[in-house]
Amino acid sequence: MVNNNCKELTSKETIARLLEGDNWLILTHNYPDGDTIGSAYALGEGLKQLGKKVQVVCSDVIPNKYEYLTSAVTWDTFKPTHLCAVDVADPRLLGEGLEEYASRIELCIDHHGSNTHYANNLYLKNYAACAMIIYELLQEMGVTITTSIAEALYTGIATDTGCFRYTNTDSLTHQMAADLLKLNIRLHHINRVNFDIKSRSRLDLEQMALASMRYDWDGRCAIMAITKEMIKKAKASENDLEGLASIPRQIEGVWVGITMREVETGSFKVSIRTGPSVDACNIAKRLGGGGHVAAAGCNLEGPLDVAMAKLLNAIRLSVPDVEKEHDDE
Image 1 (cartoon, one colour):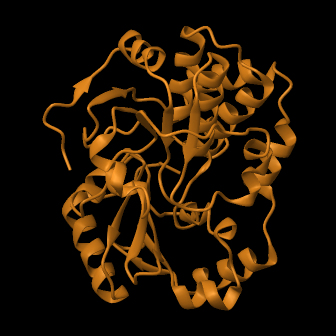
Image 2: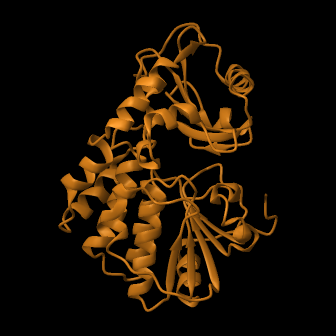
């Protein structure tokens, strides 16, 4: 869904809209990750500090590991007047339960180049994480960056950069993270719950998923499938599923890492991770999705073999004709 009247805003125009409005409903994307949750909670707390009434909503249950963010805030109760989506490139990512808001979103704050311009107004910056944009806006609005806001912002930055390992990490990313570290955040707890701890169910699921791995394009493409049956057998929760998308790309020699996760409807949520030689967003766009150059996604109807065939075709149409590998590990 494209809004032909969508206006791209400057930071000053974005701040003016946020300050003029009240009763803000902040929307996150489904299958919530650290960036959409961290961005929403930081913006929400900042607006509350400025006297605004705020709610943050997600169509899916927020994973328990983000309790250190969610337990610290109580949102207001009111009938929403203004709607703002954060880290949501396409209204289809709002998920079931929030689709009623898709055509009414006044403002979208995002960092995805593939944003479909669905909102009435869009503030878009090509940053590693949406949380970095929120950080700048809060500072310009004169919000005091409290420890809880800093933890939300750091969570967004750290998770969307793979703890500063992904190619989207730059000097500004490190600079912002360093500033947040000065605010007494629980750095080791945040990094441990997001990057180190795995449940036994998660390990069982990983074992099954790894067994499903198949290779294509002379071993430069690895595809891992996670079915509903695997999730049920492992007794895995939503908490156990985050971060699986990075596994195929970790394999030596792989340029395109794909994770296909079957959802309740039988369709597949596809995550694409690539190295410098391949544009993940280009692949995703061929399949109705989008994202970033190195990380993108889409949704495909099942069954698995049909969805996988569509993926492989999109990859072959998108990748360059490379005679020898580049050193992109």
